[in-house]
Image (spheres, rainbow, N blue to C red):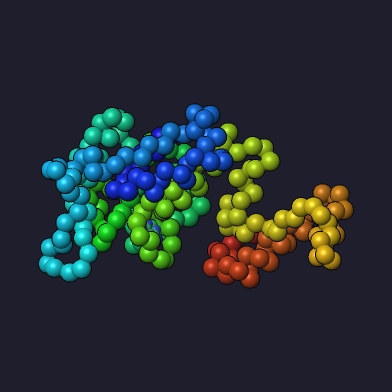
Length: 232
Ligand code: ADE
């Protein structure tokens, strides 16, 4: 899979992909991540990428021309993208199901929003998906892009070891994951639940499912309402 990321601040993405699972996935050739500087496609000595908004108002707007040129050039180089994603707080809310879908694609481009946003014609004509990672405003879309990449890479076959299976992650089945514990079994009197030490795998699985259900009902009633559990 190839993920290209178009940004005006490539430095923000210097480190998120250099460690752990994402680093390993790149070394194994499962994923190629390229951070591209939008200014390389801007004109003039100042390589201008933003400008005042028509109609007045505070805040600069990302110009369409450098973005258009960058997307044209990258699309030609890659022979097309499956999705061209724009990170923005007013996009569709990012969910595990969307990550699952992105992980099935070969080539995606992520355009990181900045300033007041992009010239709306970019969104109308060049973008295929608009993604928000939550109802809060970040200084730019780079961290959102890193979140998307991280959530997608861990789903690629071979990215995780056997012991790290993504299938047991929270949200894969709209249930929160159960609590986990490791040694010591007793820390200053704070004990690990007895059942986990019992060796009774059936009882352990039942306990985990019950915990998942209880935690989801209590912490995420919105997920709980959507849940269609077959508990018989
Ligand atoms: N850019 C700024 N805030 C954002 C958010 N919440 N999600 C995605 N991109 C953003």
